[in-house]
Length: 147
Picture 1: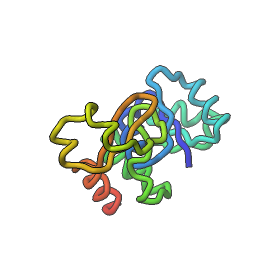
Picture 2 (picture 1 turned 135 degrees about the horizontal axis):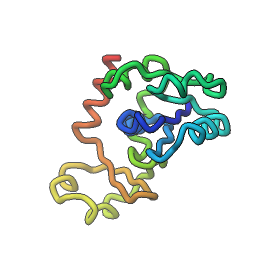
Picture 3 (picture 1 turned 120 degrees about the vertical axis):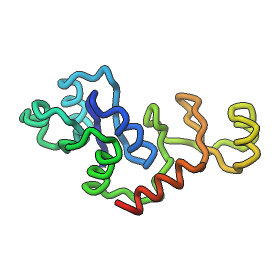
């Protein structure tokens, strides 16, 4: 299942990407652009905007009920199916699929402490971000287990 989040849901989009969901988001997207991309790419619209959700072209949407990101995420996870193995497969900033670099490739891109504590890293080729399975990944796993 693929999603597009409207301007009100940037934090939700970032969290969903970390869990492996394919979520388009750009704070500059206007409602018409959200609708066009959703229709062109077969994406579910995530919105808190009742006016957007009520538009005829927005039939495939989830109207998010809470303004708290944990509750928003819980709502979407309950309504969607995603294997837990998908966690940490997408860049939280740009939605790109992460790649597995050689450990030495990230030596100068992370702190010495992180490099010494972790063996496996992931990289976003677009944004040059580096990811590793730290406490945030354990916390996300607990979140998925509790939903």
